Image (cartoon, rainbow, N blue to C red; front, side, top):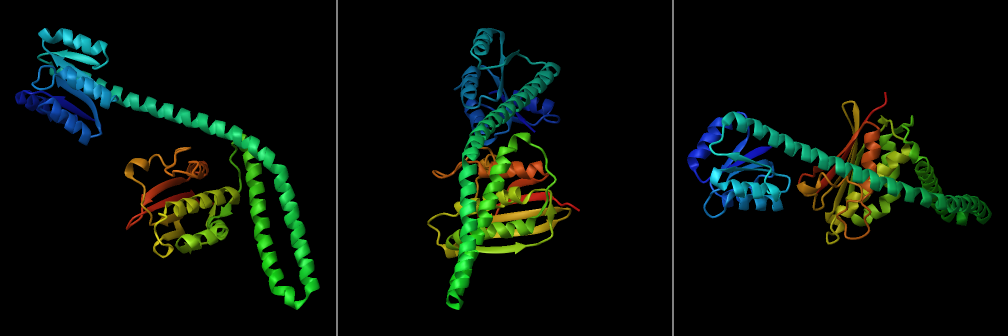
Length: 371
């Protein structure tokens, strides 16, 4: 709950204020402007500052001006005597305070004004959150327009690549037969490599088609096995994982979730790439760890991807899923986690971040299971 900070150099007034309001409102008190600023720096949940005007060292208007500059969301009330009325009016006109109260204050009137101030603070936060969401929608829409034009240009070259891969698979098979037993091992390796290339090209084709149809935003009826998709995705990045970290897996099967294998693969791939990028370059691969776990948690399927990197600071945990937000100096678009969160939430699930015991971060995707 948001706090109220009352500032007055007369400690008797502070005692009376606490006795009057502390039972129903969270109250802090300060005997000077300097003490009030210290409390503001340590308590980020202060929503309203109620300050006396005449105080030694720093007047109420001076304190309100600093609060207005450094904590613009905090609502500011000024208590004045009649002789200080001019200063109060100037403070209101300059935007430093929202209201002024005459001494001595009336408890009934002040109680109403304090509740109004808390409601104003809450309304401001809701407006800021709405503005932030609107900016995200605008940016994602702009990204969608750009992505649609890109995939339109990718469609034809991708079809050519798939055609050549298919042709190469057939040619390798024929050469293996013509070369006899000595060519068998090499032919099998080439066939395996081309099979993986064909699978990746098909996945790219599905992604391209998905982006082309993304404007419809319809919830599909596709479902897939979470464990199976995660295992397939691990194969795509296993080479990078081996060079980057020790990887441990614990993957349960037959956990069917209402997400297509393509979208689910996007989520798994984004989380795996994020885990690898979270590992410091200075850390030797034998000391770096990525853990992948798929299991049932009640009626939901749970995917956990953990790393022992530097972790995510608490102040950034609410922002890592924002579109275009990235802590990488280069190479990061800030879209992988945002897209993954959207896919998971559209299926009725959640994507969250937790601290890894011993250091690092664990991203957890939970999805409802299809019976």
